[in-house]
Amino acid sequence: MNGTGERDRLREAAEEVSPVLGPVALVFKRMLGAFERDVGISPPKYFMLHVVAREEGVSQGDVGRVFGVDPSRITRLAKVLEGEGLIERYRDVGDNRVVRLRLTPEGRRVFEEAAGRREDFERRVARALDEEELEELRRMLGALAGVLEG
Image 1: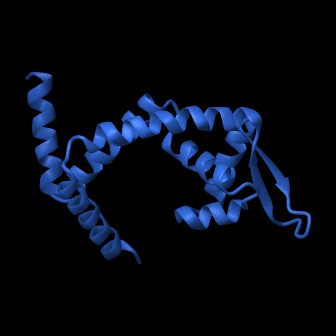
Image 2 (image 1 turned 180 degrees about the vertical axis):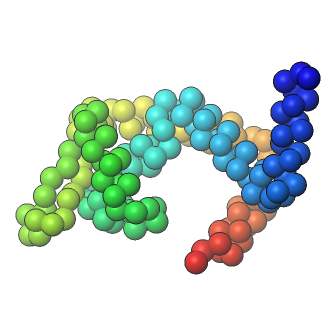
């Protein structure tokens, strides 16, 4: 059996299990990989840098709420970015329980470079669909998200 035939059969089996989730998961996986390859940074790191660049001094808790992510995951990601020298974590002066974030000069440089590459990535992906199709895709994904939102 050749690799392509086996992959096709496995893809068909996955689609039988979940005709909606299978194709969405495949596109999501490919987009994440392509984003990291083309932009040069993982989507979670990019999104964290984006929020911190836009809202200097944002709290880790607020970042978690924006993305709907458990605070412990945000803490882990913030510590990774801090270890890479891209952000600084510091305690809020008025409430020592709150950890705030700011970009380092290196973090700002990395983010600005990645932001340009992200725009190129978005344009490349968007070219696969015309404007009407993009709007329909956004509408359909929003409908799915709404159904799945607790």
